[in-house]
Each structure stands twice: as structure tokens, then as C-alpha cells.
Image (cartoon, rainbow, N blue to C red):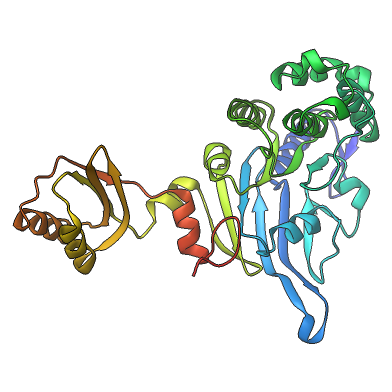
Length: 349
């Protein structure tokens, strides 16, 4: 059948193929999620709380974006606004190019979410029945994605529990069932809130590996919110940090770490006694002190000329340096520097 272009002229043959190719390129260039100027206030008057304040960001298709923020930073409100659970006071949300205010059903057809504190599965159903159910409510014939369900069961080590009621599983297993259920219908954009909560180290590693694979091989777009910095650093292409309802940083993990205003070295020596340590504290920024096998290990903020001053100070004190190493900043330290807050709670100051 012939198609009509934007001008209304009839397109056939090569023209039709060119138009289809152009449509595909346009779709690929459209972000999976585009948030513009979102604001949300709860309450009024003296009791008003500005949960989100004029936040804008976009998430490219096939990318994994981490959302970091302490309690009360606004990230949950932002996610719920993106999902249509909370109606913002201002701003727009577009999912795969569709404005959710104009077409909610169309916008959320290929979207799913696992939210912390929400029951994401039916505990009376078996693991396999949950996967089939959640595929069905997304309008997918569960028989058509049976192979996908078997792969999910295998990848999340749920195959032996496939016919077990979810209520009989451990907390960690329930968490894995929740994630598998989110992926059961083949959603293209998923929101994951604390996906590794309750998982042991090996299960967390398996989950992170699977999320990376899904993004890389299947083009799944993931927005993940977590207090676990290892999860964010391991799987995310980009990190968005929030504080007081605003975005305070938005960049790749590598860029955030390399841009950290912090040069430190870790010096180890049995000769660093209390007197030397006091002298170091007077002259330098001492971040951490440990005693390992009778030797002091001191982390000192020192780079450039300051490093030479540190070595001169130790030499003058008669200290023989047994080991010295450069200390790379960690994502949590960058987070605290940017927000002035601890990742799991309130302000650090």
C-alpha cells in the first residue's frame, strides 16, 4: 500500500523506502525519556515543601542512567512524575516522544517500573505465573514470550523455584522475581528503585551483569535509583545527582571522578607516631588514619607542590616511608562534595 508523506504527496518505491528510513532514524534520535521544567510542591503556606524544582533531563535510548540523592532530595517525586503517578505542577514529560499529558496510554505502553516499598508481585502466584501475568497486563501474549521468561528464570537463578509461590521465597529471591516481572513483558524503558535491596553479593553481581547485557544487547533503557554506589558506578553510563529538589550534577561516572577536586596519597610507615600525626594534621588535610599490623596508614590531601611539602615534613620527622600510593576519589565522595549530604540520609555537615 502506498503511503503519504508530510506534504500529502503519494510515495511509492524508493521514495517510500527513503521515508521509512527517515522515520526510523528520527525515532532512534528521540530520547526514551525527556523531562523539561518539572516542578512539584506538596502542601501550602509555611508547611509547603518544594520536592522538585524546575528539573530538566533526557535519557537516550539504550542507556543506563543512575539517579542519586539522599532522602528528601526529590528523586522519588521525579520518578513518580515521569511515571504519571504524581502530577507535576509545571513542566512536561515525554516518553519516546509522546507527551504523557496528551496520551498516557500510548506513552506508557513500553514502560515498566519496580518501586521500593511497593508490592511488585502477587505472592500467592508462582514465580512463572507472575511473569505470565505481568506480560499479559502489558498486552503481550505470555505464550509468545515464553522463551524470554525461561531465559529470565535461568539468568536470575529462579528456574528451580519457577513453580513455587512467591510468598514462600526469601526476601532476596522476591526481589529477583520483582525484577524479572518488570522485564517479562519486554518493556523498552524501565525504572528500578533500589533493585539490589536484600540481595547477597553474588545475586547483586548477577543482577548488575544482566542489566548491562540487556542495555547492550537488547537496547533496554534503564533509569536506576540506588543508595548503593557500587551498583551506580558499575552499570550506569551517566549519573544524575539531586539535592533539595534540584539537579546538582549530570555526567558520566568517569567525568565525575576525574573532575573531583581532590588529590590524595596514602602513606604507610611504622614511624608515624602520635606526634608526627599531630604535625601532619596541623599542616595538611588528613582524611583517614588506620593502623595495620602496627603501622600507621594515613591518607593526606596532597598534590603538586603540597606532595613535596609532605615528603619534606616526614623526612624532617625521621619517618621512613614504607609505602605511598595515589588515592582515587570514589563516587560517594564526589556525591558528598556536590550535595553536602550523605547518600543515605541528611546533610553531612
